[in-house]
Image 1: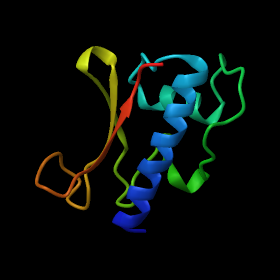
Image 2: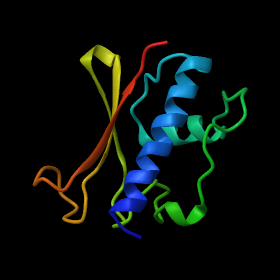
Image 3: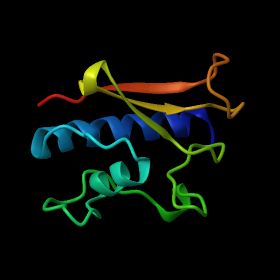
Image 4: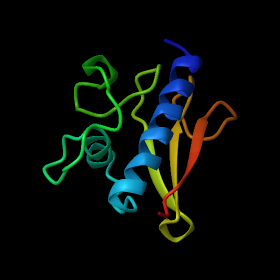
Length: 109
């Protein structure tokens, strides 16, 4: 796996998140496990089909969705909750440093 894999994963999350916001309203909880459950239709509150399909290999032993380097994907709400940012810390596995990969998602219906 590589940066291309992680970039593709973040783009898939972006598409799934947009569909989720359109159908279910804004994402208000930044707990990554809860967001992934919402997007995969595994939330106890989900009354919709999955917006994204993920392989069990894409999760670490603690149940977090991970990037190509085994680091958990990070979700952050910004601009008063209007924007959802999704980050991979990249190959150095640390925030910053110029190798991070991120997508910005409009979190407003």
